[in-house]
Length: 359
Image (cartoon, helix red, strand yellow):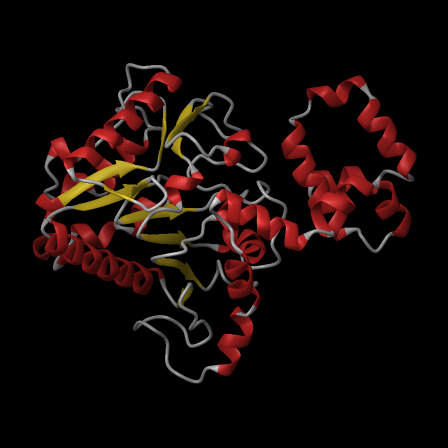
C-alpha cells in the first residue's frame, strides 16, 4: 500500500485529520505534494462516507469542479477539455476500429493517434527512429534547420537506432540543433549529466556539429544556468534557428520526452511550484525530489508549444502511472505528464506491452 494511503487508512475519523493539519510537524511536509497524495487517496477512499465528509476542501477543489478545471486549463494554455475527451474515448475508439495499426510493429489493440503499443523494444525503437528521421527531413527541407529537445533517463537508449544504418547515413545531421528539455546542474562529465548521457548514447555516434549542441553552462548556479539558457533560446529565435509560436514561446520541431515513475516530465515534478510557471521559458529548481536537487527545465508553456512531442514509456514500472495518465483528469499539478498537450501538432506515446498492460 502506498505510504499516503497507509497513513490515511489509519485515521479513524475526520478529527484525526484536523489534528494532523494543526500539528507543528505538518509544516515540515512538502505541502503541495502532500495535497496531491491526499487528493489521490481521497478519490480512492471516497466510498467511506465519514472520510469524504472529513475532507471538504478536497471534495470541493478536486472532484466537484471538472468544468472549472477545464476553464482554468484554457487560460493556462495546457490540458484542455479536448485532451480529456480524447483520453476518455480511447478505449471506445480502439474497440470500434477494425483497421490495422498505424505503423508496422504496433499492436492491433492500440490504434489511436496518441498512443502506440509495440510487441518488442526492437519494434518500438525502429519506428521511433523512422518517425524522428521523417520529422528531421521535413524540417530541414522546409526551413533548413531541425530543432530537437532531449530529456534524460531511458529515453536515450530508445534512440539508439538513429546511430545505426540506415539513419546514421540518411539523416542530414548538419541541420540538427540539439537542446536539453531539462538538465541537472552538474559538470558535463558527471554521471548525472543529461548532456553526457546523450553524448555517450547518441551524439558521439552521429555528425551533429558540436556548436549546434546547446549544453548548459555548468560553471553557473542553477538560477544563472536557467537564465543563460533562456537567453540562448531567445537569441536563436532572432537568428531563425527556432521559430516562435503564436503565444510567444519558442516552437521546437520535436521534443523527445520520458516519464518518471511519479509522473514527472522534464524536471516538472508533482506538486512543485514550477508546474504553475507561465512567464519563464526556462526555470530552475534547487529542491528536486529526485537527486540531484539542482536542475533547470523547460516550463509547460514551452513544452506545449512544440510542433511535435514523442513520449517514450517502456517497462512494467511505468504501467501504473501510464494508466493514470490516460485515465481521469487529476487536479492540476499532481500528474505533470498528463498536462502535456498540443493544440496544434502531433503528440504520440511510444509504449511497449509491459508499460501499457493496465490500459
